[in-house]
Every structure is written in C-alpha cells, then in structure tokens.
Image (cartoon, rainbow, N blue to C red; front, side):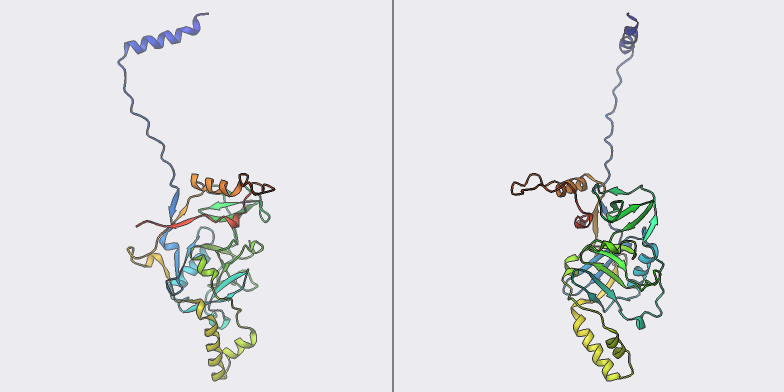
Length: 307
C-alpha cells in the first residue's frame, strides 16, 4: 500500500540534493495581428474629382488574370477620363469605355468565377446562406464554398468583370453591385472589392448606356450628328467621370493612401459578428430575431493606416 508513495519520496530527496534552478518565465504566445495592411500593388485609386476617391483592393489570389487586366489597364491610363456609364438603381454601377468599337483591340481574359481551393485560410461566417453550402471570408473577402469549389460573392462593393454572353469575353469593363446581387455568383468573375469610397459609388448619377440607335449615330458617318451625340453623352455622364486611376504602388510612398483590413478570424471580428447576431437585449422588440447574420450586410471593416 506504500508503493505509490515511493516516487514522491524520491522526488523530495532529489529536490533537497540539487540546488534550486531559476527558470525564465515562458514567453507569451505571439498573437496574430488583428489587422492586415493592403498591398499597394493591389490597391487601385479612382480619383472621381472634388476630393472624392474610390479605393479598390484587388484579390489576384482568386482571379489572377482578371485582377492583372485591371491593374494593367490602370497603368496604361485606360480609365482616365472615362465614366461610370451604366448606373442602375438597386443594381450595379458599371465603368469603362462602354462601346465595343473602343474595345476591339483590348485582350480578353479567361473566366475565373470559381476555383478549387483547400479550406485552409477560410474563416466560416457561422450562419446559413441561401446561395452556397457555406460562406465565410478569405483575407477579408466574402466567399462561398461548396463541393470543394470556392468563389467570391456579389455583395455591395465587390468588383466584378462585365462581359458579353461568352464567359471568356471579359476584358477591362467592371461593375460594382449597389445591393446584394447573389444570383450573379459564379456567373461573373469577381476579383476585388471597394474598401473606401462606397459612399461615392452610391452617389453616382443614375444613367443608362447608349442604346443601339444612339451608338450608331455616335460612330456614324454624319460628323455633326456624331459630335452632337458625343456632347450629349458627356453631359449626362460628367458627374460620373473617373478623372484618373492609379495603382498605389506607383505613387511616392509618402504621398499614397494606405489601408488595413480587419483580420478574419480575429477577436475583434468575432466580437463584431456576435454584436450583429444577438439582439435579445433590445426591450422594444416583440420577437427576438434569430441569431444569424447575412454575409453581405456585414463587410469586413477597413480603416486608413496611421502615419
């Protein structure tokens, strides 16, 4: 009955025989950063005039060819002086050169709406979704997952590639959903999102693109009529002009805007999600809403980086 005490006695003897050893306190585990900086190579800045800027973060990890197409177009001045020419209430704002006649020499890009990717780096939202088996975030971008495939979602502020009927006909014309347009998921390539200036997007003048008759007159042989149509188009679109587009990496480091995105997962993000799920403490509510949150109404926060 005493055999179980022998190790204790041996340990006591050993402690008495050997000098006490002072151990350094264990270093605290390094916490993952709660915010990540936006790579200036993936930061597109649309100068809309009057101190208005739309900042876009590209996500080449999901759609490398489409992201590269926009980056290259920006660097060649493609968007400078162009317009958001199609701004439909409750739908999308679309920008570029508008007319096929002006896009004939622009290379197209492959369809990259979804891809096979491991779950590593995916942060589940934790709420059910109507359009995907599971939704969550990757690097702050809203994504859906199902059957081993993953795709970016058409939430407000995402950057998608406009195209014709052929899935591989996209090039440089892009659109921004003004409201959730989830039925576009996997049908159009999404390759970025607005991280600042969504208020500017929402305030764009609502305009329809030229119809076939107006387009024919603009590019027709009647020079006076073509000039008149060009002036008419510009008068309608002037409030939506992109004065210039720049890649942040091409600007002097001291003068370029810099942003950081809340990390997902992170304690701050989990707390934010919880605050948007639980409304049980509101006395005025007759029925407590279910503890769910829709992925498109809770974008991952972004903030300017401190100097």
